[in-house]
Image (cartoon, rainbow, N blue to C red):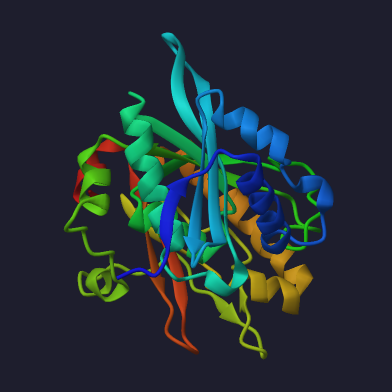
Length: 292
């Protein structure tokens, strides 16, 4: 049983707690903190701010608001999930999943069926939550989405992002967020069928993975694309190598999406000393149902 609780927050006093939490999650950039008055405005105009509390201390938050997306038939309403942050000492404790599940429930009550957000495609833990556990899919790669970022987690690299689509009324999402959630995909399940990553990683003497020099061919309807299992640690150890990964994966995913591949799953194996993170890409809508 979890030792935290999730609740809607809407008072100035609680929004000040969210301000302080942002400083712990994204250090060294005061200008990137969303202030209390903007958070209040969001919740008073159809948006929501959710807080995760542990013994009445805030340890996580999520903020989203209604938006519009362009379709061939004109503007269509959606929910934009803009920020989620978990206190560094509480990461990997299930708080992020609980916040997103609460958002799923509330946005459905608003009559919307589509939630979007962005995340860094090189962050394995985020990919595992967003794609594998929540059931979001992705076909959109945005170069330098936020320009030059100045906080301690993002400074120095192009702010490339995936924009994911979370179709919250689908069977795919229901199977992940229901009372009996679908188990996440394991690498050995695929390797037993003969499936292997589409390229091999080179490993440097300090055990850091290097991307291939050239983009591999896209010649299967189902492919596995591996990324560093801990990109944050890799960036701290070798910034130049982190840039190489950014530009390799930029070309990889832009090419994949142009060729009608969809990111449908993510495999994260956190085994100490041999952890791995791999995206599953399927070609076209016809193969999507096998990954519900």
